[in-house]
Image (cartoon, rainbow, N blue to C red; front, side, top):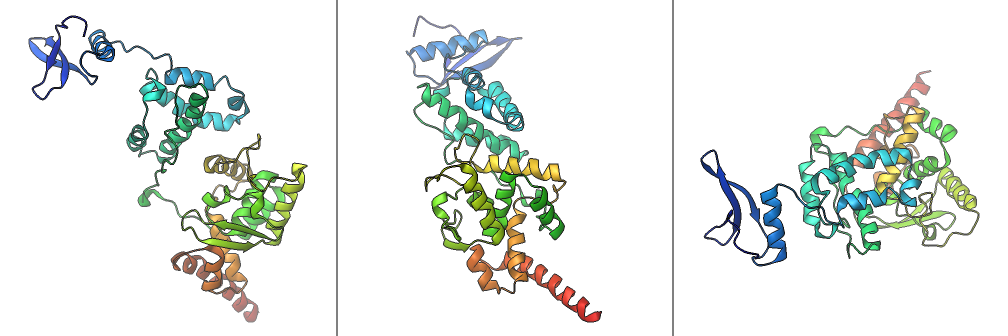
Length: 338
């Protein structure tokens, strides 16, 4: 420590504080967390006394500015950049001057928890930090990515909207007017009858020309899925449009630069396409339920549907297959009535 700092006070438990008299009362204006006698101790003291926090050269503000200058940022769609900008502003406000290397995974979870009232924004926080951390590693400002394996928040049950199964007219509209990439995502969703989190994991080595293979992310269940004619056509078209034979480890769903597409990028693409086509009432999660209904219409039993979808319980199968069977029986009854 350099000299004696007159505003310092040490708690009997050993903690150091900065305090001073204001309007005749002793007021604590900050706590020093660094070890006594270190340069960091001195830095924290003078920051508290002056009310000015020095910005680290390897700060989050500097990293965000560097990210905006990259080709990667330039390659993002305007919509994706618009989604990330509020998160960058939030990080700049909260930790902008802090050293990039000091952020921990626990800090990320804390930030997400404080934004629990806006789940979508909260779940973008680790996405943005992960992207920035990769750049920080290249700059040697960090040695790790603290946002890896962060579990996203779930929307509270009371705020969840029911997933409306895609009706025939919406399916037809997507197949007739959908753009190639969202249409491929759509066919993977309906044809595989899997959860959206599994769609982005499919690689070309999982497709043998007739079936898709996977181990479900949620259950670990290995599945072999015969493709519908629509899914096979979409996969064959996507493969042909690559112009080369894809490596087996190349992901089927990729960004423009060929890198693997993550869940959030896929959700953004589907949201934009559904909005363009006037199909916002039917989200991507409901494509799994549409697949269940199609299997029920084909006369499959609950066990047969479960072998395809990988459901471990029958509740959701009963709900959506039951609805499909009611529609089918009603149509049969109507035909007899005529």
